[in-house]
Structure formats: structure tokens, C-alpha cells
Length: 101
Length: 508
Image (cartoon, rainbow over all chains, first blue to last red; front, top):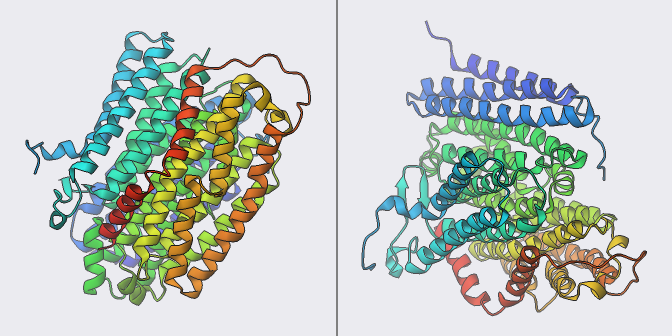
């Protein structure tokens, strides 16, 4: 028994919205990163479900690339969060406000 | 016909040279990690980007990408998903020019900096990504190239590790970048869901053949999310708010690099995706909306926000950052005009503007780098009376400012003029509104650009400064940028022709 495509899309939209909600409400930079990961994984679910639906492997292969890029992005992001902590003694994204308007 | 036949993968040489240079710098760094041999490192980076520039110009004049009917060699597609045509070569040239200027200027900016080799190799890697973006014609390669350009940029913005401004800028740039790339990749997944393809030409074929019927809303949402990703990369509304902070906090040569090369690269993928993947009429039938309307609105909003915010700034670097948002709005006109007859003229004009902008905006940011090198301060008042002490650099600044504002006879005037006449000649209500917005905003921009000119030329210094030195690299880069901003006037015919040809070939 296969699960109908629309349930996958619903799941991925739900995951995307949870991620977006996290991005908009969390103040901790690490939580922000995790929320972005949720959004990227929502896209991966879509890609894999659609690849199954269309019967070609393009989407699945692209999902692998997305995972690798997400890992690279997190590596750079953690580095930036580390220097953020060293300079501001905090990982709260609302603390660095030396530049406004 | 060429006398000898190069293998097909060599068509990507402009990007490959950048990648090899980056790797060479990494190797050098791993052999002698503590080396601060600035001339060797900056020289390697500059030589690499100049070689890339030379190869791209050679290919472009030798007829790579020119349709075979016109006696060229035709588009070359070395790998499925990467194509080298006129559009790609044109933007590879823009990226290489900016990279070379930035590499030369960084020679002086990075005095006493601990991470020399890392800096240059990150610049070259980002430039590789931008060159690849110019050639990518599948959503997979576009996304990977975009990330290859973005990830080193995040690190570069935050590279002054002990400087709070730089770290804050890096954080903001990274957070917005991560968010927008998540949105972008979700958009890709929706477009894939609606059409079953990631290769741009295949997407268009499916849309035109009616294979995506019934998935109009999915496709429409996907296109909207893709536009979000492009807006981030080109620093246009609604994803522009990272730009002022990132440009202000970043080392000034990196601000120059991001605001010129990165913006041009963002535009080339937008041009390619929207000319190749989403044919206007068929897509409109499917999603019930003409996507060029979105760009008409974005163009007007972006140029208005950018210019009005720039007019209120006291910090010179921040003013340039907002002006860079305004210029993204001007270039967006090229996308807004795509549906109409004569759209290739406007798109060509937008491409010209991005090339000219590559010189004048890079030069302007490099002048800020020079001011930071002198440590004169950041506001307009701090720049008062600089011309008495540094006449040559200030003359160059005057050229950049008037060219950015679009005052004849500088190159910035001509690209805006072509944008304006192109939009007027299409004559639809939307294009007339865009053209009117262009004129109003240009007039407003003259106010804040000439404010800087007035500060530098006319006002008296607030306090006595010591003698100002003349750093060779920064001066060389600024003077080359200024000379090219003026000299482009003579070469504008061929450039206009190349840009319009490339746009016409992309639209065909």
C-alpha cells in the first residue's frame, strides 16, 4: 500500500511552516539554524516524494546534494556563531545591534 | 573556424581558472600557514582573475556562444546542466573584472591581517561560484553554484574576527542567506513537483506541452519562492534588508565584491531561469498570472526603498549599500520587460548596467576602503576636504558618484539611458510606470551622491588629519575603475551590441 502524494506534500508544508515559525520566533542562533534545517528537510521530503511520483531519480539525487550543502552551510554557520559568542558573550541574535538604519 | 579544436570542457575555463587559483592558494597556505607574503598571495589571486577575464574575453570574441548562423561556434554544453553561451561569458567577464579589482585592492587593505591566504582563496572560491552561476542552466547546478558563491561570502564578511561590526554583519548575512536558500530550494522542489524536471529547457517543454496542467498553484508558489531566492542574491526587495548591515560591517573590498559581482551573478541566474524555464504565455495560462508583473512591482519598490533610504544616511558606506539596492531595482527592469516585444533591448540594457556598475560601484566601495585604510572616519563629515590631501583618489570618487547618479557623459548615464528608452519604446502602462520611477529615483540619487562630492571637494576638514599615504594597490584599483568608467564611453557600442545579442539569444 502506498501513501498518496498529497500526504507527503502536506507533511512537507507542515514541516516548512514549523521551520519558518522557528526562524521568526527563536532568538537563539542555534535554534535558528535548526529551524532552517527543518525547512531544508521539508524540501527534501518534497523532492523525494515527487521523484517517486514522476518516476525519475532527478529529485532523489538532488535531495542528496541538498543534504551535503546543508551540512556545509551548518559548518560555516557554526563558525560564525562561534565568533559571535566570542565577541558578544551570547548567541542571542537580537543582541548584536551596533548597526541599524 | 578555430585553427585548433579545444575539448568541450575547456569552455568552462574562466570558472575553472578561478577554482584552480583558489586551490593553489590553499596549497600555499597549507605549506606555510603563517605566511603573510601579501604580494605573492594578492598577485596570485589577481593573476588568476585576470587570466579568467582574458580567457572569457577570448572565447567571447572567438565566437563561443554566438549562434552558428552568425558564424559563431554555437552554445557549448560541456556537462548536462552547464552551458557556455554569450550570456554566460558576458557575466563571467563581469565577475572576473570585479574579482581582479578586489584582489588588487585587498593587498593594502589586509596589512597586518593574520589570515591572508584564507582570505584570497575564499574570494576566488566565491568567484568560482559566481562564474558557475553564469553558466548553470539546470536548477540543480544553479543551486549548487549559488551555495558555492554564498558560503565563502558568509565567511568573508565575518573575517575580521575581533571586529564586532564584521561579526554582526556576517551573522545577519548568514542568517538571512540560510533562510532564503531554504526558501529557494523549497521553490525548486515545488517546480520539480509540478513539472518533473530540473533542467530549465525540460521545464519549459513540459509547461508548453501542457504536462503540468492542474498543478498551476504548485508551480505558481514555486516560482514565487524562486523569486525570493533571487531577490536575496541580488539584494532587492523583499529580501534586501541584510544588505546595508552586511555591506557596512564587512571589510570594504568584500562589500565591493558582494555588491557588484554577487549581484550580477544573482541577476544572471534570474535572467536565465525566467527566459528559459518559464515561457511567459504558457506559464500565464497555467498559473493565471503574468510573472513579469511581479518584477514590475519589485523593480519599483526596490529602487524606491533603496534611494529613499540612501538619502537619509550619514554613514558613507551605508549610503552606498542602500544605493546598491536602488541599482538592483534598475536592473530588475530587464526582467520586468521580458514579456513584451523589444524585451531583449531592455534586458541587454540591464546587462550593460550591471557591467558598468561592476566598475563604478566597485570603485566607490574601494574608495571607502581607502578611507578606512587612512582611518579618517565613516560619516560624510569625516570625508570633508579630502580632495586637498588626495586629489587623484577624490577625482576618481567624483567620477564614480556622477556615474552612479547617471550624469552624462559617464558610462552610468548611458546604461540608464538605454534602460529608459527601452522601457519607453515598449510603451505598456507598466513599463511607463517603471520608466517614470527610474527617472524620479535617479534624480533623487543625485542628491546624496553629490552630497559626498560636496563634502570631499568643497567643505573644510573638521579636524586636522595627519599626512595621508598612497597605498599602491588600492590606488591602482581605484584608478583603473575610474578610467574604465570613463573609457567605457568609447567602447559602449560593442558592449551594447554584445549585451543585446546575448539577451536576444537567451530570449530566442
